[in-house]
Image (cartoon, rainbow, N blue to C red; front, side):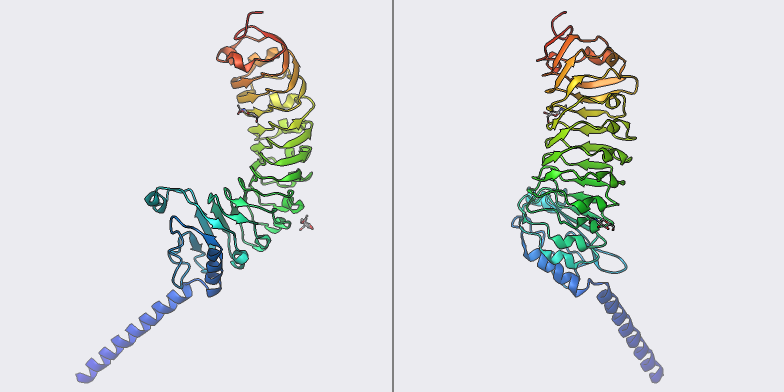
Length: 374
Ligand SMILES: *[C@@H]1O[C@H](CO)[C@@H](O)[C@H](O)[C@H]1NC(C)=O
Ligand SMILES: *[C@@H]1O[C@H](CO)[C@@H](O)[C@H](O)[C@H]1NC(C)=O
């Protein structure tokens, strides 16, 4: 009797020990490796976040467990995502009733997180210094989103090594230098946003190698040279924004033959030549060519395929009449042909009924509704 009880107790105790050991073993093997934890702590040490305390949770051994903005791969238990957004719906922001602000810089220590797949430090407004060039050696990186900081320096020269990269967003920083030649090697890239920096030089001629690209947003930089013809090979491209740069030369006619291009913003450059007729009968619905040196006539190639929510041709050197075919467009929501050298009667018809005089002002001799009668 007594022996049985002892044995049972012993067995219970033993199994409890086994269970506890197993549990603790599991939790140890579930924890992030000390090297990942050390890299995160070094990354954190280079940043100052005075208002929200987003790094307060970065304590304890397991950086895969409840560290704000950090997540790990379920199987490898390596750090896979850093997701720190300065503008977010997270309760931490609502409680503080403010958006985020951080100073400091991005430590090259992040490059030791060799399994990092998504790296977002967005809209912190005050983070300065360069993008660590070693970022280009993170083989699993898919998302790099550093929008809305004060980063300076250049895009890493060998960024093209990031063969899995789908999103590259460095908009609204103070980056300079040129577009690295290797960039066109980013064969998985779908979303490129470098708007609002000081990036100069030309758009690589072989830009069209970026076959997966659906959005190419390059506006508000100091880019010069020609619009590469090869862009029109990117058959998934739906949004091309090259506005507010110093681009020159003609608009490639092939841009009007692209399968899904819906937005084409080339405004605020030094583009010359004529408007390719293809643009007018394409699937483009937002077309802004304002403030360039575009000359010649508005192509008489409008038709039922022409559906424009925005067509802004203002501040160019267009001459002649507004073509009659424009009345056959299915829709023109906002038309602006002001500040050109157009002449003759404004066509009648549904695309024009709702337009105001300001859409036509400052031309040579346009007349008819909504301007003075001819
Ligand atoms: C682009 O990739 C190819 C093939 O991997 C390589 O040979 C080439 O050097 C790369 N180009 C640049 C500019 O890095
Ligand atoms: C077109 O571009 C010009 C110049 O950048 C800008 O001022 C204008 O607001 C744009 N037009 C529309 C309709 O967005």
